[in-house]
Length: 256
Ligand code: NI
Image (cartoon, rainbow, N blue to C red):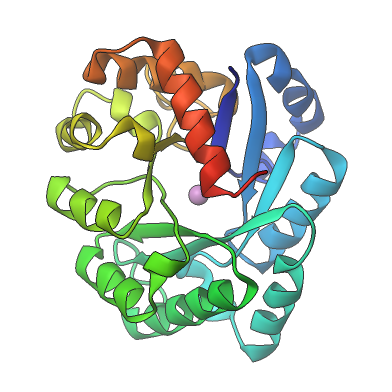
């Protein structure tokens, strides 16, 4: 069974020098599927180019909370149009990020709700980015009936209590390089607690490279380190982690 990277940013300039070479080598490293995630209007455009070029790359269309200052009604209409393209499998990444409170929370909340409504209209699951904003994120998701959309809480960073809330809504939890960090006690507890059937692997590359490559540019090639750590925590074989999370990812993004 091959590895599915549910969250990557291969359009990032960190890959400008060797993007094609790297993407073409992924199959040799046991990676058979990647979802490239939009974080702004420009990166959603870049994502469209990547999915046209590489048959194993799928896309998500959306604007990251810290970039929502650029949004307006016309751009929401454009996103809706993009969302109906072949091989766009989700709306994201969308959510709230109060770590960087730019733009102000009121603005982030407004466009988060608008993008959830958009996902509902085009009937796609959502990729949620939530940082230092647990309660507001959950409140808006409940108000917008996000449980009916389904999706993933990407780079899950909260504790077991929050994990339970999202699992009850039917969401998957995205687990990446952070789980390998020595100080990630809370996340390790979440991984131990959550059923393997609700976890998916992600890189968020070029960011959050796992140990032993922490601090270097990340790519899907590093995902075996993440699978290995989850296997250790759950006391099961790494093969099983790869097989089940890959199947979960296909369910999450509704592959046939
Ligand atoms: Ni991301």
